[in-house]
Image (tube, rainbow, N blue to C red; front, side, top):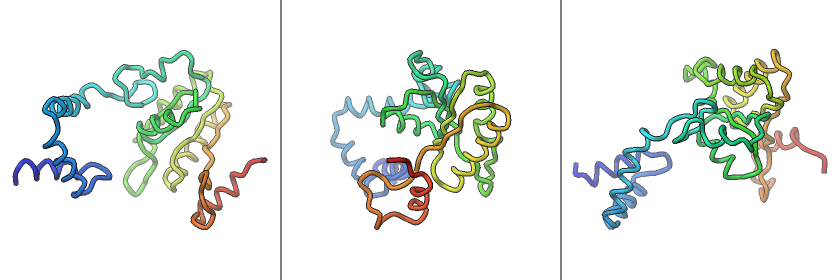
Length: 196
């Protein structure tokens, strides 16, 4: 196996990249400027050294605490709970949300051996118990595991703390067609309907 095959195999292990896409990437890199390749390889080699989870929210950051947690203009009375660090970037890129975040690091998945103790829930409870939190937004994915995790968090927080707990709305996307909506999405759309 030569270096082209090894690099193709490495790229094909990345999410969403198959063997053909990996081969195209390797061929592109072979034609790229040497300075670009040097910078690219340096960035990859330094990635895990420089980027760490924020000690407050768990989002990926180069500076601790992260720019969101350390921003005094953010609404510190609202925390949006997400499954993974990349979910923070997704919500931030959409714009409109000005509160803080809390990354769980996964979802409760008993079949995979992931219980609540393996998630970043204890630090969430600590943040809420410190006071000043008025609303918790549960933004876990609308899957069985995501819904179970949201329900678990709602239960432990509502038992001890006087905080508003909301869930992201789910349903038919803008521009979507009812004909192509699955039954679960359609059912959620009816349950989550709002006044017009």
